[in-house]
Image (cartoon, rainbow, N blue to C red; front, top):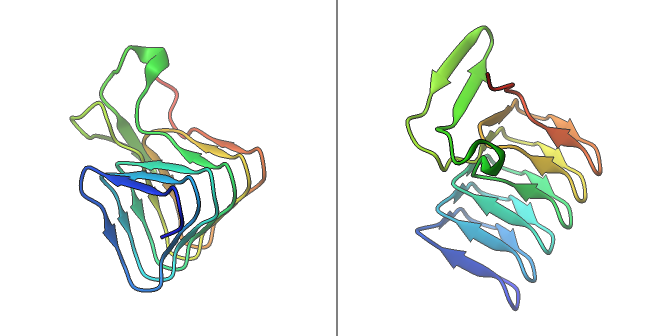
Length: 127
């Protein structure tokens, strides 16, 4: 835990996790060996083992553009209704998320996925 890091709403950090300066983690699980560089937000998410999230990347947890509509997750050809309006992402083991990337609510990143710097991952187009 670096200076200025902020954990709220119940956070689980596995062994050897790093939460860098000015990061905010809200109601999330970070499994062992995962790292947040600095100036990150992770909300209502599950971060797998050995995930690296570079500076400024955001895992959003609320669909502001849809007035807080309930979050949905797309998996293969299925749409899963989560039943809540605040839910971040499911990030698989070994993922690498580049600086200033945005992961939209309900995103599912398979293990070892790479998100480029300034990338946007939004796997669901709402009606």
